[in-house]
Amino acid sequence: QKEVEQDPGPLSVPEGAIVSLNCTYSNSAFQYFMWYRQYSRKGPELLMYTYSSGNKEDGRFTAQVDKSSKYISLFIRDSQPSDSATYLCAMSVHGSSNTGKLIFGQGTTLQVKP
Amino acid sequence: DTAVSQTPKYLVTQMGNDKSIKCEQNLGHDTMYWYKQDSKKFLKIMFSYNNKELIINETVPNRFSPKSPDKAHLNLHINSLELGDSAVYFCASSRRASGGTGGTQYFGPGTRLTVL
View 1 (cartoon, each protein chain N blue to C red):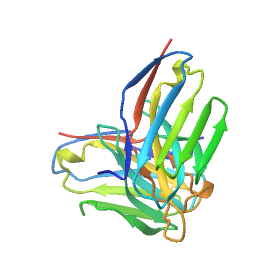
View 2 (view 1 turned 135 degrees about the vertical axis):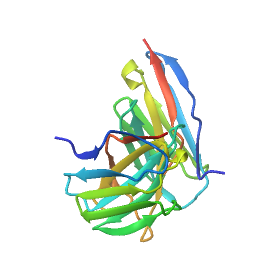
View 3 (view 1 turned 90 degrees about the horizontal axis):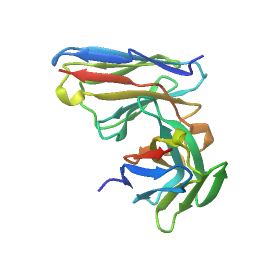
């Protein structure tokens, strides 16, 4: 079993839909949770970052972390064709043992159709 | 002005050859990383250097040898290339080797390696 599980999709939605992307994890030491967006043939870029539990909102994007369930989500409101990309969740531990090592989910490929 | 750059962008080579990929960052970061992304988009860390010191060395065949000549550069040399080495290799950098915003990693555009 992988430390971080993410449904690879693909996920296809009409423009304007609300998109929900999710990851589950097994390591309770994870404290930092990130969502990266990767366009085709490009490098991943950081989209959202959350520390510990709670919600964080940035424009049309909302990241949620539920540490009790070991579950994180990314919501995209009013999705646009330009949101079509692969979304990767990533996590790391906190503390002196932290080397910055990120554990990634497999990524979910999203297509938003006009 | 590219923050993290990699060369070459594409690399096609025969099995058994030796090749190198180069990475440079102009962000003034202390930490650099190499990742491998397979055909299913799964991104896995291989190595990390902090101030030219190796701090992450995952279970990677010893045919892969990273080298950091200075904080701004991290190269990856691969000996005796195998079919299974075909993947996209990403370089990344962060201000420091930690979680939190200081550890935010910035990725390069990737090097697509194809071994024939």
